[in-house]
Image 1 (cartoon, rainbow, N blue to C red):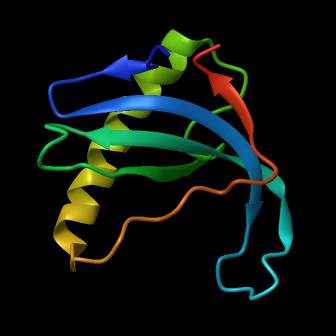
Image 2 (tube, rainbow, N blue to C red; image 1 turned 60 degrees about the vertical axis):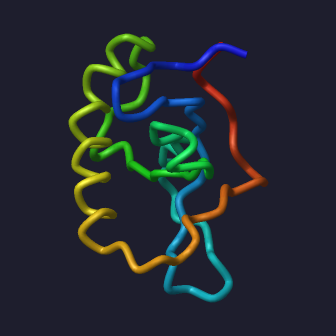
Length: 108
């Protein structure tokens, strides 16, 4: 399986769209917008063996882009996401993927 994009620090394994939800709502009621779920693998894999997901709304990265356009807009947000999680790291497990209601958009 091909990846969406690779850098020296991480690999974008896949990108999905999924209905957004309010994480503070115990019923996870769907909000009428979508978000991207970006499956990432930090490198080197022997140091970071788990994959995890980053979430970005259409407010952050617009919908309807080509894969290259999406990558160019997403990379700064992903880099910022890593800075944020590194600053907040507390030895907890990364977020688990949303299995239902997601549609893979990259790689095709």
